[in-house]
Image (cartoon, rainbow, N blue to C red; front, side, top):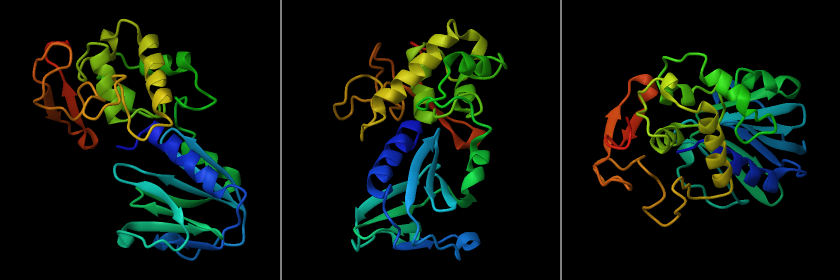
Length: 255
């Protein structure tokens, strides 16, 4: 599931492939921007901001958000494209192609004002603006809000998605539905969140347990019915009405 670490890693791959190169093709397959053609311009920057990604080229900024299923893929130019009907944008240079697939958000912005798209975000867990004290202030301003919902609110801190929200709740022994006020040390929580994302920013397979072996990477997420790694109690799962979120928890280790 794409979260802040996934977007950071994606930006790094696109940066290596595109920055300093001139676009020979720009095919935007979103009706509103179908006439935009940035070919002939040089890619200057690729940056991530929380779960948002910007490719700055010429006078424009290509802004994307992966949402639940999106991805960017880099391959040699001319390589056959699988699931071509899901491709939302194709960028090509003399040697490579970058494909934006099933992107949740894709828009072409004025480069000088592209920050407006992310001005609502809290401090970026993987960015130069990371400020744990500010993140704590944001997180605790509504003490009655469920912890998982507060962590997922990108206005509080940018980058945590459903996997990390569930995993953090387990690590700190709280139910995802417990109020923020139940956290003994919120500063420790946001620092641990940043530590987790930072450790995974260059990994293909995310781990929160510290064990990268297949099937051992996560504490609770996606493990409904399996035994808790600490106490062996079966992990539970529940659907949430908030943005179709799913929560996982150990009924013994989390209170």
